[in-house]
Image 1 (cartoon, rainbow, N blue to C red):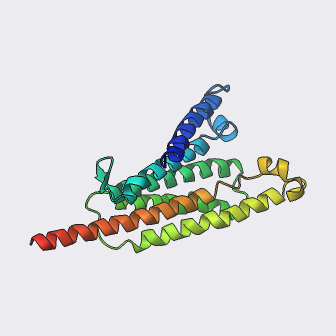
Image 2: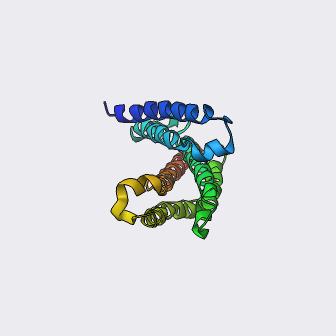
Length: 212
C-alpha cells in the first residue's frame, strides 16, 4: 500500500503528459514553438510522473537494495535526478523565453541547473571517483534557487492587476508558484543520490581491501 501514492503519481503524470501532448499537437501548426509557448505545458505532468518514479525508487533503496534497474542504486538515482534537473531547466527556458527574460534573475534557472545536471550525470557514469564538492555546491545553489525563485514568482503574481487581492485570478495568470520548488526537490534528491553513491563506493573499497 505504501507504493500506491507513488504509482498513482506515475500513472496520472503519464496520462497528463499524453493529454498535454495532444493539446499541443491538435493546434494549428502542431509541434511548433508557438504551441509549446502557449499550449498546455508538457513539463508539468512529466514532473509529476518523475516524482512518482523517485518515490518508487526510494522504497527499495530504503530497504537496502544495492541496485535499481540493473545499476548501482546511487548511480541510478544520480542519473534520474540529473535528467529531472535538465528537463525542468528546459521548461523554465521555454517559459522565461516567452517572458522575454524581463528580469536578469530569469537567466539563473537556465544556466545553473543545466551545469548541475551535467555534473550529476558525470557521477552516474561507471568509474566516476573522487570528491564531488563542486557538484554538491551546485546542488545547494539549486536548492536555494527553488526557494528564491518562488519569491520572485510571488512578486510576479503581486504585480498583476489587483495583486494578491485578486489572488484567485492572478495565481492562474501570473508565474506559477509551484515551478521553482521543483529545482529544490530535485537538488535534494541529487544530494541524497551523491551520498548514497559515496557510501556504496566506500563499501566497495572496504570489501576490496578485506579481500586483499
